[in-house]
Image 1 (tube, rainbow, N blue to C red):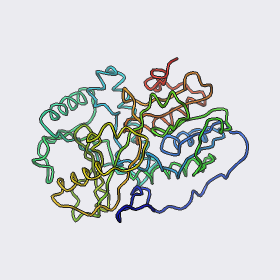
Image 2 (tube, rainbow, N blue to C red):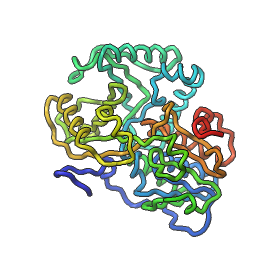
Image 3 (cartoon, rainbow, N blue to C red):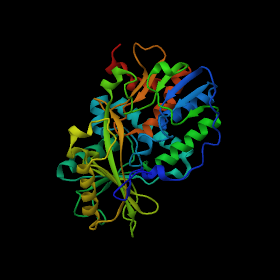
Image 4 (cartoon, helix red, strand yellow):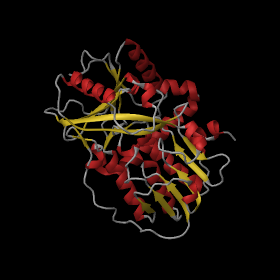
Amino acid sequence: MARIAGVDTSPYWLTEQRPPLRSRTGRAAGAVDVAIVGGGVTGCACALTLAQAGKRVRLHEAREIAGGASGRNGGFALRGGAPPYDVARDELGPERAKALWQLTERYLERLAELAGDAFRRTGSLRLAADPGERTELEAERDALREDGFAVEWRNELPEPLAGRFDGATFHPPDGSLQPARWVRRLAERAAEAGAELRENERIGSLDELEAEQVVLATDGYTDGLVPELDAAVKPTRGQVVVTEPLEQRLFPCPHYARHGYDYWQQTPDRRLVAGGLRDRAPDHEYTSDEATTPLIQEALEGFVAELLGEEPEITHRWAGLFGTTADRLPLVGRVPGRDGVWVSAGYSGHGNVLGLVCGELLARAIVGEPVAELELFEPARFLGR
């Protein structure tokens, strides 16, 4: 367990004790039908679906299951994608935006079915930090209502939000995750279905994989495996702090403001999990370096103290990487020009739900099903044809 000045630098979610995967199928020799690189939500969802379809699957994870972005995020389970809904309608067109939001709402139900107590249906609160952001929230609210999506306007806010934020929108379908617990359960299901899971096995080259098909499920951790992906999916660092348990439950659901640059929630034992503030040093936070930095960590501590009106003890601090793309949508499908190579990466900070969506959809495409939903995420839009 790593520590800096008495503070645990292991992600809080990953410190939860768990037994070894009971249904591990061992280290079988020889080729498999599909090799998956990445043991996060995408890789585990893909492995489960492929194994259930009768494919021989081997998953390689450089650390432990959920050791990358899936165990290092803020624990938000949100519908939709990275752009607000009204912006997505403008960028994607009304029909495609609506279809994407409906798809993620269906998969929130799927997540709830699979995750058990690792998921709590709490809704989420998007807050306006200033009058300009309030205008943006109102535009998104109106667009969601116009297309039949549930959303509530909150003009009066409770303490300690009152006076700090200029209104909010509440999104009922959303929820809170213990993301590592959720992905570990998904991995257990995949192993039970027959997938071979190899933890602590870093893949340095695709030539190391003995498989007819290869899936890159690494989000921001592509690490040179496919150079053209490195140009299209930019590794982005997110930093998080966790406090000691607070005396009161102040935040019953995930909260986020300033276009997602500030985000926080409370765990069931009343700890505050707070992350973001990447915009304090944007040039430095687009990086593949997973280390925490004094600038962002001090900013996060200051944000927590201002929000709470006190300085609680920080018990955990960490950083993780996620992948961002130019249009903030993931790349999911065949890698152009590389026979048998598939990718699902670049969730732009929304991988907890989209990772489940895309992992399952990609697996269906690999077994030969027509998957119209993947058209929106076609990798050729950035990787060429």
